[in-house]
Image 1 (cartoon, helix red, strand yellow):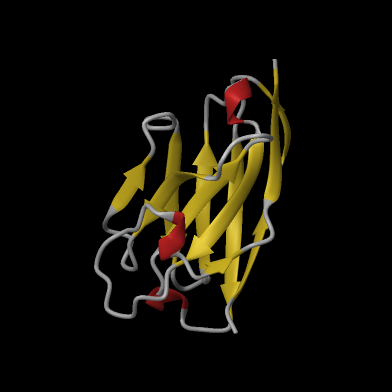
Image 2 (image 1 turned 30 degrees about the vertical axis):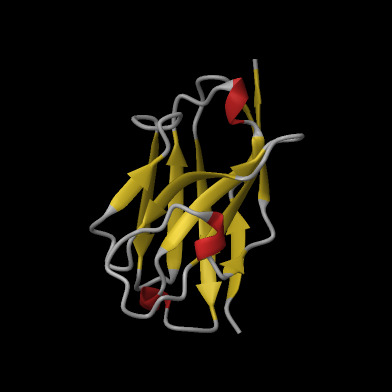
Length: 127
């Protein structure tokens, strides 16, 4: 059973930074392409960033491009999301997710392509 646990959320002022972490257990971490999603109140869950199994390929939503960075440390079974220049519109619950396509070489952008999810961590950006 794959388990994902996010941490690092919190309250930050606009313009500030946070680093989210997602620790993965239960299966070889390098088997999974990973993604970060977010869901704000009253809105649908949306992709924020994604990374391939090797970490060589990444994707960013246009709304976070240039401000957020996704990375992974396969030795630590952890994926990170560094968020800089935060805006109030970044306020949401952030979820990490794992894809289970064993031979994948790319990232995945759709929520339905992910089979395992963390419980989420709240990020609140104040003005």
